Image 1 (cartoon, rainbow, N blue to C red):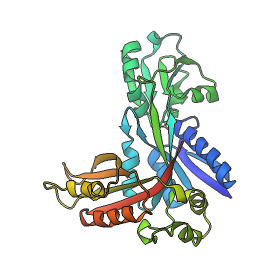
Image 2 (cartoon, helix red, strand yellow):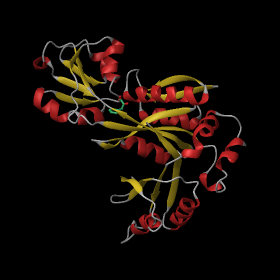
Image 3 (cartoon, protein in one colour):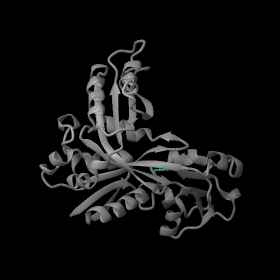
Image 4 (spheres, rainbow, N blue to C red):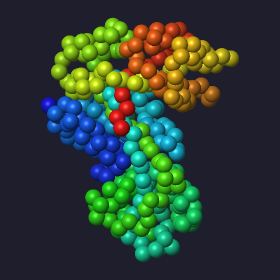
Length: 307
Ligand SMILES: O=C(O)C(=O)Cc1ccccc1
């Protein structure tokens, strides 16, 4: 079976490395043939998988130093059809790529905002006068690299692929630097419609698709459920009740993040990662109760983390 996978491009990004790691997992588990499709932005990669232009997208969601990749959360909230199939955690290291002879020559440093932020102390120490310029990805600005006043922060793999000189590596401020990626595809069913303990058979009844193939290979060992919700009113305790739904059942949350609704200042959408399988009766009852305390509730999926 052929599976197309969107990721942030051009070739050599960390998202592409994550996509390649996923391809390796897929080829072992499902014997499928994969094609990688680079997109200019994270939103475009997500939209391609939501509209069916590709089967899956691989996007960064959270970094251990810089926190959430907000464009991923915001786009996912907007798009209704995507479900998380898996999570994948990768170590990230950054290299300074430049044709300059020394740091003194460098006036501009381009990269993805996450990479610039993850190297800010190093840049402040070694190239304090450089202007930092955000780009759509760590490899987008490699086109400018012939200019010796330019440096680009990319993965060392990008330097190898494009045969470019590395002036310094690693330059990330913290050696323990990890990014979590989500692999998303169109959902085969709404979680609400699945009978308890019935997930694998309900999946089998769906027409053949890449999503079915992947879920067949992994549906039994989901460990995480990710969701987001808005609350009906900005009042005392609005978030306490949603939190109690999980606490009272002894269900652990591994992440909570708020993002502005973009409707009015001070109104938020709350993103949560729940350390449990949404197919378990206990979790399903928690999600049912959660509906009572939320305005809009979106369940992004129930998945396992590949290591
Ligand atoms: O631009 C990239 O290479 C990406 O995949 C986004 C990113 C940037 C920095 C760390 C992890 C992911």
